Length: 134
Image 1 (cartoon, rainbow, N blue to C red):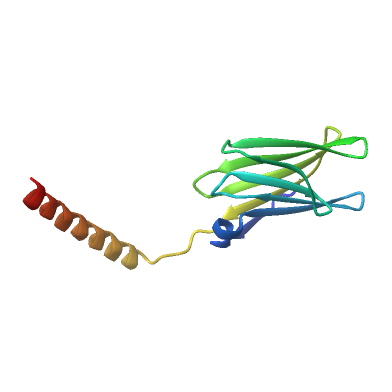
Image 2: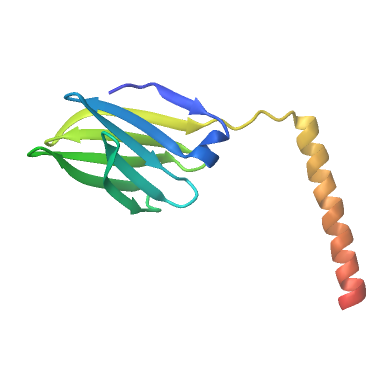
């Protein structure tokens, strides 16, 4: 099991989480959407398991020949978008890959300015709503 966590930016939201495994000359491609909850497992380009799940942990079962395999999605940290994907062959752990979202670094000056802007917009909206609707 690798402790390496790959970090990606905004493409996780547009392209989803992608993991790739190689087992006995077979390519296993795992994809998950953080928007729709859709999870797709492909074996050599052919879909072997597909479903939607919004749970923190999700397990897919499929066979290669007569050997049972599992793919486990495990959400480590929802706020950081940290997801682990584990491949299990016949009950034995094969490999775990980990992927997390890298939040863009925004200077504090920009954050304070945006916060003040939204506060002013809220104040004006509240005043206008009270004035004309109240």
